[in-house]
Amino acid sequence: MQEAAYGYGAEPLLSGLTLELAPGSFHFLTGPSGAGKTTFLKLCYAELLPTSGHVGILGEDASAISRDAVADLRARIGVVHQDCQFLDHLPTEDNIALPLTVTGRDTSRAAGDLSELVEWVGLSSRAKALPPELSGGERQRAALARAIITDPDLILADEPTGNVDWEMSVRLLQLLVELNRMGKTVLVATHDLGLIRAAKSQVQARVLRIRNGQIATAGADL
Amino acid sequence: MSVVGDAASLLRRDAQADRIVPRSGQSARLTVFTSAAMAFLAVFALALSLASGRLADRWSSALAQSSTIRLSAPTAEIEAQTTAILSVLEQTPGVESARTITDAEQRTLLEPWFGPDLPVEDLPVPRLIEITEGPQGYDPTGLRQRLAAEAPGAVLDDHTRWREPLVEAAGRLRLLGWVSLGLIAGATGALITLAAQAALSANARVIGVLRLVGARDAYIARAFVRRFTIRALSGAAGGTALGMAGVALLPGSEASASFLTGLGFSGSAWLLPLTIPPLAGLVAFAATRVAAYRTLRGLQ
Image 1 (cartoon, chains in turn orange, purple):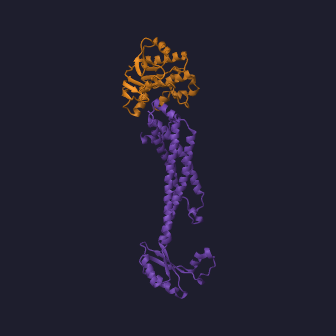
Image 2 (spheres, one colour; image 1 turned 30 degrees about the horizontal axis):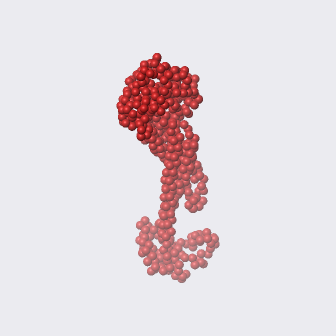
């Protein structure tokens, strides 16, 4: 990002955003509610385009690419949305396989991978359940599985532990750390400072803080 | 946004893609019902248009080549004037043949009004002379002038006076039939567009999720277009079948020469209504495609 800014009205919510996420790095993004964490993530997967400045995603200029190119780019980014964004009429395993389905990849050939992935996130017994039947933790794990099924280069997670207990939060964090160890770039937006502290022993993470619309690397106070 | 690609996707059944869009009962029923009702009406509009065409052709061809001379004269002069008329007609260019209608034929013509035993020979019924025109036709104004000189009691009726309005009416009726078909196609398109837009609005969240996980616009649009096109096709097929059955059950034209009893298809014209379901599918394909891409353009 280079001097990127975004605002929903006349006043910019975020401005002067200049940073780069190095491949294979792990980042936390923190800040109070309403600070713009979700907006920042949306800029990272081109759901929003900057009102000024430049956002480059996996080598593409987000403001200059076609709608099809945006879709192709999103297929290379795994996003764990705060509200999971499932299709409630499809079973959980079909929701997890959705990024493969919509990009025309043969899900029957990837069935083995899908089943391994479902097992890895601990949802084997819940694969046929509809999303509304899942608990908060199960939903977050399913969302994480969907985010990584295409083997993306970048994983973005928006408050992935927002609706789960501490034990589940730690488990989700461990999954994200494992993915980072596999070489994925991970950015986790959270207001849970306890989670960030818990991660320090597992991964070398850079902590970014949004304050007054600006982003900065947080200090040792975290 | 390839039309060909979208059309080709109709033929490839993709079970997974079909499941992605939830089945919305109301818009599905609306599309099927609308297509069925419109196809049913289209069959009748088509039958009306074809029947009007046949009628116009029949009237113009049957009457255009013939005309009649009606002779009203004192009994003593009637034979002389008849001879004079036939002589004039013989010398008139464009007249192929002419003959006097016999008493028996006149009796047959009058039978519906006066019964079978009418003594035509004792009544002051005008004598009728039937003229058959040649391909070039004759000059009616010149013939009238010569008849006025040779047989003052003769009146030439070339049927123009009532043939033209009838042919014109049949032509207008045919045009109305085609206009009705156009309106039916337009109304079908409009209603399917509304149903598609309702379905797209109801599934805005689904569309948003699909975009977020990397679906291209073409993939999302095709899921909706395929569903609506198939619904329109199946509804129109049912409506067409019912319409054709309805037309087949109308009384046959042999029973009477009336226009209403001739409202139907004959011979290869029975194949024409079979084009209605594919056309309804085409209208649904175009209407849903436009609605889908318009909705998608509103999303990042």
